[in-house]
Length: 155
Image (tube, rainbow, N blue to C red; front, side, top):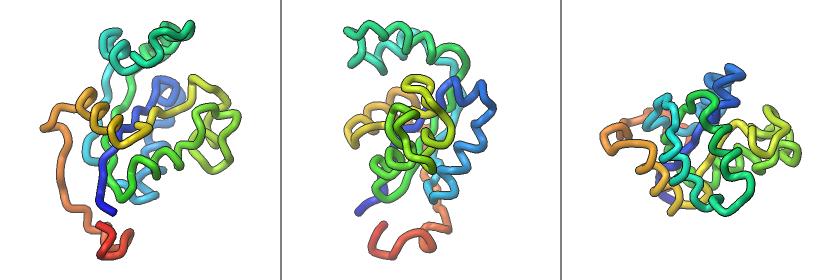
């Protein structure tokens, strides 16, 4: 398996609840390398593009409004099987259905105010990373702990 990158957005509810450091530390403790990180206020245009798949839903505007209440923190995380591993760590979208120990199971009770957005596929991760980061904002650096996290043939 190769190293792969994925997008995580710490949603406005996370920022409002002062959980940024706590949530980032979960990803770091798991072993993901942070290759990019920035705080940003999302625009209606960016949200319309990001949530285009929901544009026909009655809650589309509510989702966009929720994502503009406060800034988000965008993360590019890297690790072996990062897309699936990050989604498993986040838990199901609805926090009420998420197991304790997952991010959503530990920090939320909502379907919408659910702490993080995570890319749901390799294709989505590639598109979403380009949407939220310029190429020069994603850094390639050597993380010395990888040899303690993975077997030599895993990365």
